[in-house]
Length: 214
Length: 214
DNA sequence: CAAAAGCTAGCGAACGTTAGCTTGTTTATA
DNA sequence: TATAAACAAGCTAACGTTCGCTAGCTTTTG
Image 1 (cartoon, rainbow over the protein chains, first blue to last red):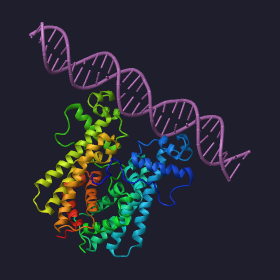
Image 2: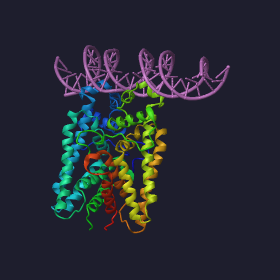
Image 3: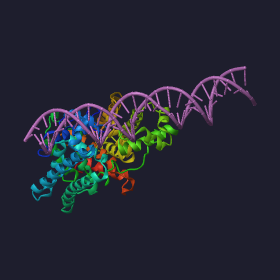
Image 4: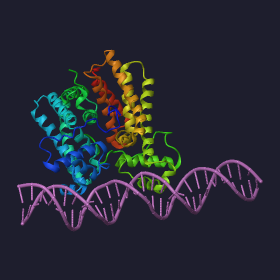
């Protein structure tokens, strides 16, 4: 509910961009890119090896020269997604001034921008992780937990300083996290808003939510 | 990202409850209930007719005495989910006093409670709608749009009255909607919080997000 | 000439679905 | 009331398709 695309598509975006430097050259990269599109639009289970391969311009069997299984392709995408997300949050936080309000804005902005700039990657990372066997999922969940901790620590510090006032820190984090998560489903570059504009507004929302009245 | 279950499951809840009066008696109801569990946990594509049937205690073919296709089962679940959600939002709004802040609290509470009380139904309604053929999805999307309009109208009215102040009404709605949506993924009754407690906190968050400083 | 990357062919399993049968219960009629 | 017709709800068996994946061969390329 609430601002999914007008059609029954899972997300509004159409671009299959991967963060610079994360996609291998050649067919390996194309396989990643086309898998990303199909996993995002149809879900991992509904996207077949033959679908993916035909978009790359090869036969299904040839895909196994590049990846040992379909699950490995998904795991690689989810890894890229989670690592990029964590890296952005951490870098933003490190670059932020010691002011806890500035830190909050930095992590929220990074969180939102990651989901607006790489919507397909975000949708796949979040909605298809459950399709991975546990041994693939475990290290990825660890990255996820690190990202959560980053934001939770900022909120906790603000509360300790008396800058933030909330009935429940955990609920505040889930609320702020959810706001950004959902952006990946409805954002499209031709909506007239840049990721930065959305991120700014959501950073304001997050600050207000935490009781900052400035 | 952010407060999914610790495992790689799609949601934390285990109950397959449907709203009172929405599930048929007998096998038809059991099929709905078991389909709900499997669609929520594994996704529509990964849940097979034989899986569903064996949980009901019948053979796959026997399922077709009750529903004409797998898609019809999903469509029925999504319909129940969307109608229950809309009904709760509308009833809450009708019962609320004319004060726009009270109205906001009412719709946010209804939105959150629906997702906490029927987490599997919410996850399936929101995450599996894309798996339906378009002719099934269209009327369901109409219900969804009605629910969005309910909340958007409250926000718009508050802004017109000068009670709410936001840079962008649409962004405020997506943010508030997303907060509640996500509850379905992490909520479990043994978290020590009741749906009402979460709803109260989220209603406070929503009011703050809209610039209410009280 | 060797390695990388493609191909065809096909395996076994699982998929949604249909056909046709059995069984038990309800309903209408002689 | 007894019987027959109709129905409901399950079953087995199987259809045709698609699935992920493998084996083994050919082509391209450095």
